[in-house]
Image (cartoon, rainbow, N blue to C red; front, side, top):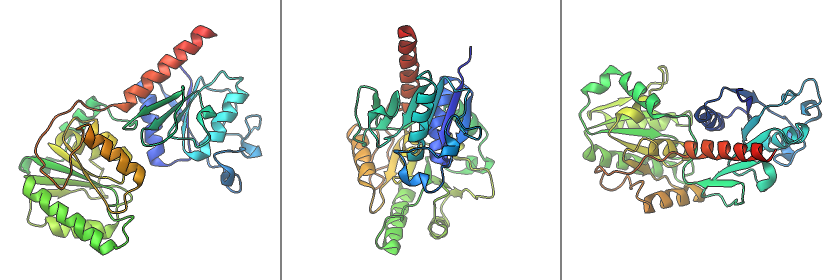
Amino acid sequence: MALRVWILTDGKMGDRVQCLGVANRLGVDAEERTIRPGKPWEWFMPWGPVPPAHRPDSASSPIAPPFPDLAIATGRRMVAYLKAIKAASGGRTFTVFLKDPHTGSSAADLIWVPRHDRLRGDNVLVSDTGPHPLTQEALAEAAANRPAAWDALPAPRLGLLIGDPVARARDRRAALERFLREVDHAKAESGSIIVTQSRRTPEDVMTALRARLAGFPHWIWSPEEDNPYRALLGFCDMLAVTADSHNMVSEALFTGKPVFPVITEGLNPKLARFLAKLEADGLVRPFSGSLAPYSYEPVDATALIAEAIQQAMRERATKA
């Protein structure tokens, strides 16, 4: 009998893709529940309570029964909802929370946290990188359907994945110029550069980058087209990722290709510790140094989390 699975988020894309990635790796069809408690209730999150209209016994509740066998959630607003499902189901629903719930290890049956978070416990799974929706098959398929213009670009091809390299800078102009100097360095170390940006990337950063790459073999994604993000991961010879995104670094390391984090000014201390650990383990190398090839085993936290869920649910079933 197929598992009934819910995914609970407040709709943030980064949260959704992590939960969906775990569900996909489990091989289950999950039902997404996008929940926004609204004010004043969200002020009390993650501790709760859920709004009266969202209690499981309310006809209008987004978590009304029949309850799932498995509920996967992330985001501080979802902690109280996950606990409410657990209580209302009589403990039958197995609950999973991704990232630190900030209420302790009792928030769910199984909790995954990145190593740079401090939460630990018998039910807490820890890894350096995070879950994602990628598979090697999906990357290969995307690369096979890459934009035709990429084939004319000389190797080695550097994939540049940009978030917001100037978000936390005190002097935004100086930070942007430092980023562009690193791009100049990459031009000297690569045959061509393929660029894709995120929703957070400021337009002035992209305008400056286009000007800096003028005359050099390159391709820049236009937001009017489908984002070839997966094709870039699967096709490029090496990857540079602005270090403001734990998700993007995690996904880049799933490829097994050389990964060079672009360190940005004012980097979150947690992310700085994350990157320092990856570099110490030989998984990433500085973008400001040599972009020479190197090898490592692809890193896949999604499989680790999925296996931990399956094992924990099997153990619970044998005790029932």
